[in-house]
Image 1 (cartoon, rainbow, N blue to C red):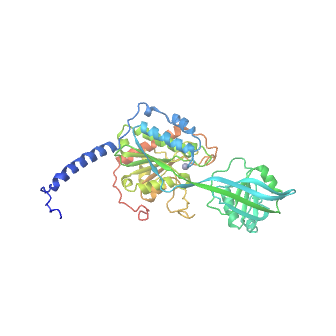
Image 2: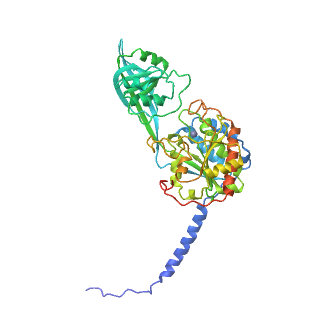
Image 3: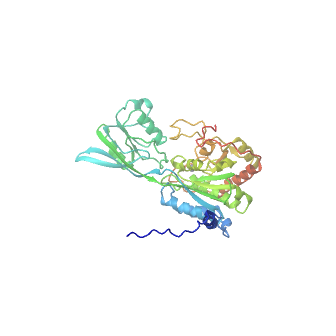
Length: 449
Ligand SMILES: [Zn+2]
């Protein structure tokens, strides 16, 4: 017999607000607490941090060695710079570049020749920018100062030359354009060649020592094989941004921290880093600190990759930027301190320092312009800012003989401080001068110029 059905006891339903209100209240209190706890704060300024000199900075920075992208030296330099800014009371963030930077980690090269006792291998080094490649052909020797007409007659040949008169890259471009299939440069140059990567060359171009060069020159007229074996590694890179919490980048002090491979990068660009750090030190505890950002860019030497990424990621705050001041090579007196600046900033700079040398930076050639010169000139980190309409000033003391060489080992800290002094005064003048925020323009910069 089935059990009789009894209706279940019922209670009047709880009104929704009785449930929702406590939940909302608890949520609100929790969110408030989380927000308060996670709100960025300025690190406490440390006593004595403002008294550290640029000379002491240089002593610390030089110990980390070359700072090419991906190196231990750069990573230690970043940590050191972060500690310096934090000691001054600035909050530091690191911006990871969206794309990893391909850096060569292996550049082996060889020439196979036939010797009396069978085939022989002579070793060398693939030039930067050369890909893995192999070519066999008849070896010719290029005369010093080889003309384009002479090169034109060498189509399909492999060539060897002793130290070229001009930049290695010039000769390489001319030789490959004339149809040579490979080139060996005997590095019997009086001083090391400047860093000057070739643009993705798919033919074997290499350098050898004078000893190997002598063995190779004995092979002229015979058949030889040039081989390059190159491996790159995709390397992460970071910009370092130091600013007081809630400060807008009304003025932005910038310099690149990376160096070219194998160079301690004293003038290029530890000097600029010293200048930016010194400007941050001067600003600490003053109203300028609340209106400035201090940025150390990465991967400048690979084509302004850090500053390009910075401009792309900070399009909105950059609307407030009255002046971007870029410091590159300001620690060696190749020429008096020079400025390439927006006309408004040039006028202000002249008021601050009437004898300041004005110059026009060379046009850039990069992957972005495909070898053509852009109508906007600039070869350092201020260029991406200029391209989106930010007023820029580039402070620079000219190219010294050690530029992009392993011998770029010394700088004068007083010269970096002098550039920082001008930068701080120019920043103040730009903040005092009337200014209307510019209209936002597309992050590609196309509608800005
Ligand atoms: Zn530089």
